[in-house]
Length: 219
Image (cartoon, rainbow, N blue to C red; front, side, top):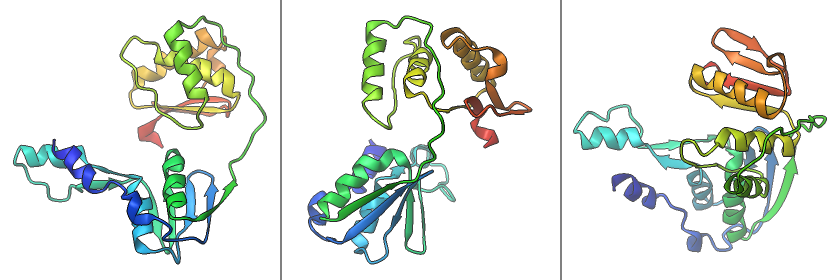
């Protein structure tokens, strides 16, 4: 379809990048991946930007319906580029490394994330075999997306992952009903009470720093 064709155009051409930049590249990890791209060839900078770029479904929906596409970008870039410095979502780290390795760059990774004291949660439920499998795969990676059908227990799986990670957790939702759903599940499967769960949104701003739920619209 149109979206797949549009994204095929911006796919990274690895062959074109072979050994194009064999200098050191410093990647700083904090709230995002921060890369100083000054001195890099333009095609390498473009390739790095493309790993965080996708076709805008709204543009193609309007185009198909013959509506105006004025002021609707064809592509969305989920990063920031200014003055030779590129910021990309942390979830792109693996593909960013692949791109730079293909370019022959010498990578230097600086992990500047703030490491807080471990948060000790205990899981109070029993997972189904397929849920255990999902948890295992998630824990093998620093970043990822869980895609599963309604009723498969995504929230329960997430509760189990929280107990393994033992770190402060921010849960983002887009509807008020999901805040209540998450609070209920956290109380059941982590054995915590309502006062231990922070909420940002729906007129509330109570942050615990251990486990908090926030409406995306309020951030």
